[in-house]
Length: 317
Image (cartoon, rainbow, N blue to C red; front, side, top):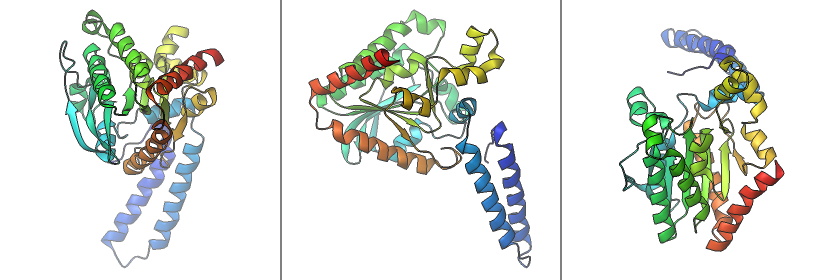
């Protein structure tokens, strides 16, 4: 069953009428309603396209958080063959908020790491809503070390509201683990490509997103803090999240213009949650295009490019 966001109400009403009309036609085949169905389908499609062509930053935030949006496990299943997950950080334990392992992308061996939010209540609890603890980032460091040793490209998929802020995470060195993961990304001797597929929140995202090429899905967001958190700090009013979302420049379009990311992956009309397979295919094409030029570079060139990319962000903003 499709879930609609608040701003999608006009489209929801049209599609509800369309379903009623189709149901009527199924009950009484003698009623000639094919033209009415086609007309209503066209109207609903036009309304959806118009709506998504002018989304505000706050509306994009809602789309990025849509519960039916494809998650990392969906991208992994659709793009990676022979995927073999690995668990544990060899220090404390396993963190299922970060899923990683090795497989083949279009026949090429790769290391794949992603943040998984979970698609239902049970999975969300198991994956801690995609909010990693130190052991999750240390697992990522372990996998990146293996990838570097065997000369494998690293693909990372970012989808998190941020690193887990609990007391136990702080006790086990959350900040240090994020810094080590960021350092591991910067020091990789092989190409790395990141895709922000939903939310890219704070250091929880940058720990996996310090890559040669950073891609964002069209309606994803990427920021140092959530709009609600920023509004609470700036105005002591989380209700002003819409204002914060606009001021923070968190959309893919803003970040491409500012040079923070390298390319935008187009989503199907109505967002990735309406056609997950199409979104995953487009993401695969974008990753393949990003990997091709990087594959010709040696380890020193890859590290230098990566470092210059992020230094330039600091110099230009």
